[in-house]
Amino acid sequence: MASRQFAKKYQGTLAELSCHSFNEVFEKVSLGEADFGVLPLENTTSGSINEVYDLLQHTDLTLVGELAYPIKHCVLANGTVDLAEVDTIYTHPQPAQQCSQFLAGLDKVHIKYCESSSHAMQMVARLNKPNIVALGNEDGGKLYGLTNIKTDIANQAHNITRFIVVAKEAVQVSPQVQTKTLLLMTTTQQAGALVDALMVFKNHHIRMMKLESRRFTANLGRDVLCGAGGKYSFREHPKSIGGIGASYQLPQSVGLLPKRNY
Image (tube, rainbow, N blue to C red; front, side, top):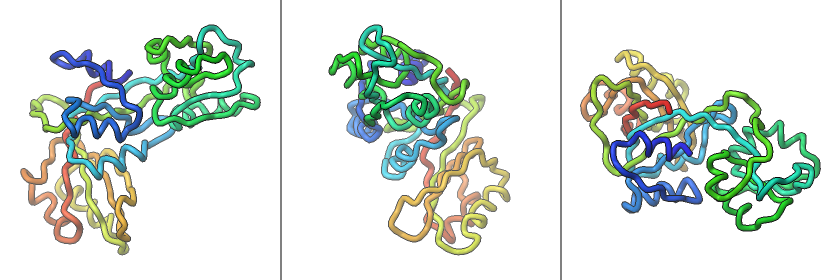
């Protein structure tokens, strides 16, 4: 539903295109079949969405937006169903993790994982059986004719997911708009490698807001994603990354994020 919120705020007309996986979102935008792709990056309960972080390393797309969206998970069924009759739940791993306490309280229920929440809801709607339900957003369930039979099932009452918006072309952002820059760099496997890299940001007064370390490549180093406050382009600020580029693989600016809360 975050994609719908983005579409409402977009200055123009956008048609929604459903995808069954995060990888498919990247593919649709890369092929020009979609102008934008909206993907979850991290959640207040389950943390980082590692699959999306990994896909960012292998794409030529650029980040053009960010939004924080409250997630209210519920149990979605075909019609009014007694929760005690349910023996199978379709869900993406993220909602399952965010609702783990609720799921642990169910007796003899089999969890079937899907590539996305929309795919889970689609499967439940297609199977149309009273013993099979999905975890998802109530508004999303309405798109598939599903009924909310249990709400407020997340571990945390205030469950928020941060989404990113990807596109083929970068956007021009007004200086008055609050922004972040997402950077990707590779460090070597030696003592203090990451500290040395981060000192460059400190020395140039670049505020670090997020640090995510992932082993993307087959080498022995670590690829690091950094969220920096403000507009920092490596082409426009070569001095700020001279110290990093001298020792590590030259950093790459993944995108500039105008922040919007919907």
